[in-house]
Every structure is written in structure tokens, then in C-alpha cells.
Image (tube, rainbow, N blue to C red; front, top):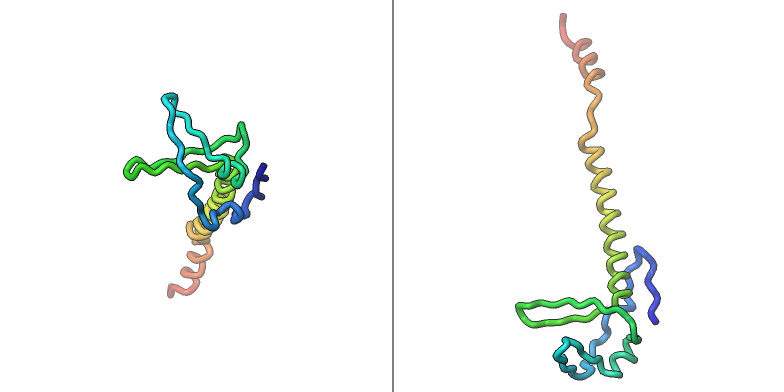
Length: 114
């Protein structure tokens, strides 16, 4: 069983290095497939594990990703997005902060000839 990576840390250990073809599976009438035993063993897929199913209908690609691994990627990206949002908000707050025009008006009055 894989452990969930720490939030905010990219789970590099889950990236494929290198990939491998484990064989072929046939889809049953009920839409089920069997994963080859080597794939289950090497990838740590146990009975009852949840798999995320991604696909591209333009080229017929189907990708299976263990749900806990996907959750680790999602946690990492959400942490980074939140930090980016905080930085953008801080920038916006500084950029849109009102200037002290009352002091500027007083300085203009003093420097204007009467």
C-alpha cells in the first residue's frame, strides 16, 4: 500500500521511470477489465484499491491512476495554487491601495503662490 505524500511536496516517486507494457486486457460485456498480475504486483495495486480513469476520446487513450497517488498530485498543485493566489492578492492590495491625497493637497497649498 502506498502512503500519501506530504501536502505541498511534489510526489516525484510516483512518476514513471521508465514505463512498461504489462500486457493486454479484454473488456467484458459488463465493462470490466483484469489488470495483469505483474502490473498489480509492481504497481502496488491491491483488491479494493480505487483507480482514477482518464481518457481522450480523440485518440482513444485510457489512463488509470491510483486514487491516492492522484490525490497526492492534487494536494501539491492546490497548495501551489493557493500560494500563488495569496501572492497575487498581496500584490493587488499594494497596487490598489489608496494614496494619502490629503497630505499631497496640503503640500500643494503650501507651495502654491498666493
